[in-house]
Image: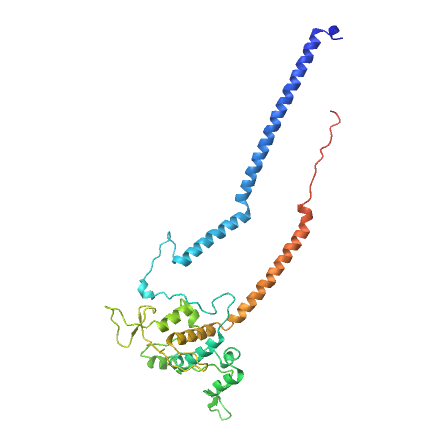
Length: 334
């Protein structure tokens, strides 16, 4: 049968077979090239999404800010940002060390026995010059004293009240609603009794001083003799923790100055620790309640967050896990 075919037909059939083999080889190379291109583009797209995703940017920002904050906490300043001070470090006073206060932790509360002893130190020592205007007798109830003890303490103080039916002022015993009395009737009397210096009110002294409780404790226990070459004026005292190094308040805490009711040894450091704890409570009476509320809020919002994540996954899992297939229409002409 092949002998009957013309030579031209055989040549055309061989040319068609060669073109088909060439097209299949080209298709194979193109497919492999497309596969390689798609794999490389997929890896590049993954890498690009890693660098441009919002979570990666937030993580990098938090890491940078945390590193800067931690370095500043350790060393006080950044190496590439200079600081300009109008005064020297000696004018700012010696930086107080950090003490391990019992209420310093996130889950720690005040030592209420120390608050009671600190109130005794304040009443017998500090109240001679310093006021505590923001604390009333009722604030001591349930913190350091019972109701009867606070009432007896208040009744020991005479308060001016009135006017009465005759229009005259009169003296009466104190009540729980009265605030702790000050040592002086006015600012002028306070300055006259302290050589022109005004003793500050101690209600917010812990919040008002840089260093807080550490500073006040270091100040009360930091009285030393002045170093050689330092001259102290008459009526002043040397304390390296006070800005400038000289302070008009003399040392007031000495061993066994007070006698604690619970038998605690009244050393200088113990009295300073107790009175600073009391002043810290006076500056922040809601401290313990705030931490309790904070713990409850963290537990509640953590549970709500977990529930919201579960609801989100339940609602979106159908949409995120669905598969979409595309069946192109068939061309009936081929």
